[in-house]
Amino acid sequence: MRYRENEPKDPRPMDVWNARVYFDDLSGAKNRPVIILEKRGSDYTVLMSTTHGRHPNTDIRLYDPYEVGLDGSSCIRTDRLFKLPRDKVNYYMGHMCDEDIEMVSAIFEELKQTRAYRRNIY
Image 1 (tube, one colour):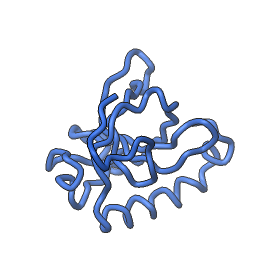
Image 2 (image 1 turned 120 degrees about the horizontal axis):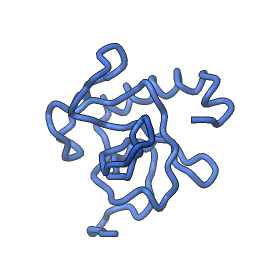
Image 3 (image 1 turned 60 degrees about the horizontal axis):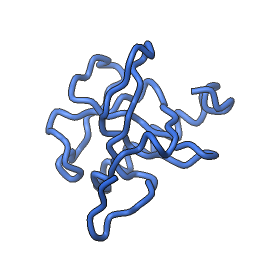
């Protein structure tokens, strides 16, 4: 893992980290930015960021993607929470701006009401 001076060594809520994320169909995986929502047990709950929004009803554009080194077309997939162990979280990219933190926090509060989240099966 690579660390820069003053960079957190462990993910914190509303940080953006690069992580290894499996495809929806589990046919493979790809390194991509994720937003850390919480640490739950030994895993991290995250939302994935993508530049290829394919779900217009659930993909949300970031207010300031440049704050964390993302492309201007970056959006968050809100249709699915991901659970990642620490060894799949690669390196720190940055901490989101206040507007994005407010938006993601509200989305996460809604996702916490889902059956999958309550049963920890996501």
